[in-house]
Image (cartoon, rainbow, N blue to C red; front, side):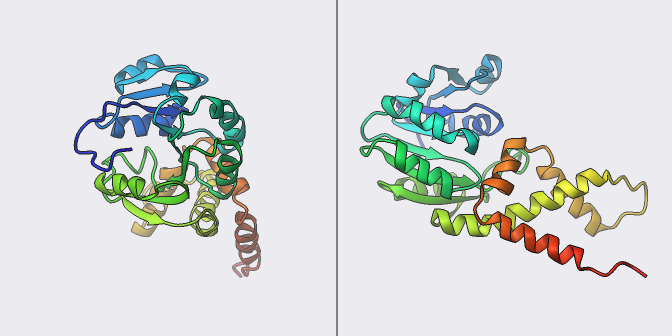
Length: 247
């Protein structure tokens, strides 16, 4: 990954998993890299619209930079398939919502001669509609030169948070876990006030709208795969159940 994304690199970037987030990355990174994308259910017309080329997993894995944009539940299987095709010195990143589990998987399964950085872009297709500038990304260096990833992200206008997988998941358990829990509850309540709304209510529902259409695997990763989420959610449920009923 070049430290200077002010000009296009000739070497391609491989994106494994070309769903909503893989497509978002292609949209913002195609100006700097040729994009080779692999997905189990490819969408050639969408790839063409984003200037990406659909290829096999083996071809995408042979790129100098490889991004894993797959559900956490599929990470181990994909990493095992990927490993034999990675070139020495390649840089592998993931973009999942939790970091402890994926970091351990990448360390265990990927060759010793590749660099590994676990990342979590703290934005998605909805929140990045106006662009990436000012959005946040968490970076967890695992193996290799961390600074070129951070420098690239900063040049894209991202606010970089250097952290560890454990620190990330502790914070994310509160930030994302509670957000998705509350959003799930309010979505199920199916609230539709006609006229009597407040600014605070509108802001709350706007936050719900930002995550209500997240893929089920994203919600599962945030609520079930984060090792610290259980304690936070149990505390929340305990406190809400202890509230006095209105008299």
